[in-house]
Image (tube, rainbow, N blue to C red):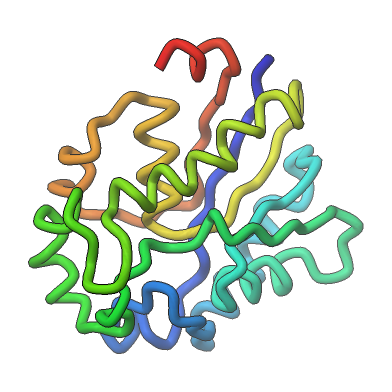
Length: 185
């Protein structure tokens, strides 16, 4: 059993524009982000999706709300799709996050979690998708932790490679998650 997953990051937030690593803070979309969310909806409305899963953080929810306003497509919020919890460093300057990324791969942020823990959390939802949505095409709206989990689970990219690779935004990524492949990992 497999499921086709389309992944999109939340649209640009005010914090993104200010160079802030929001983490588990809610965040809000900027005007640019609202336009991007609208464009995401235009891009994906006729994409044969069965459901949209989104992080429960405001910037991701707002992306889904704008993108699929007036659509009958179900939108499901799931806290497992949240960004990495930077703990007391939620809201830190993005430059600090980038400088600490490899250090925090296995060592949790103060009062937060490590990148590996965040990927494992996201994987909890991703492991359910092949059985619950077999043969379907679903959209997932999330964060860098979501992207890393998909790259790691679906493509086998090591987490330390992901931590060393700059994130480059694009109009969605496509994955196939297979129940058999999950059981082999």
